[in-house]
Image (cartoon, rainbow, N blue to C red):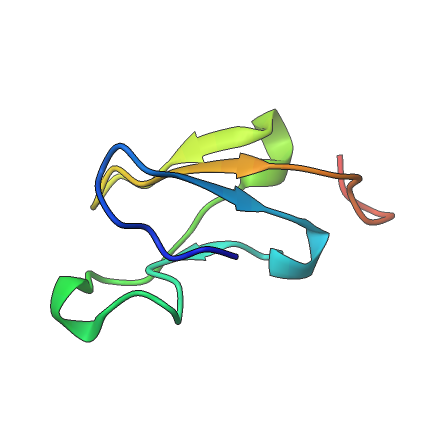
Length: 66
């Protein structure tokens, strides 16, 4: 997973990143906000309601997900 650099950044995530949450461990502490879990596997793409980072799922979902 890549660190988000700006609100327009698209971060590609894979099954290894599930469950997805923001901020990610690679984001700087100064830009942190409360942790929120993002169900990216439901639609394939989701935007964090706090920082507007866009996450896009790539690859195959693990078994047991939509």
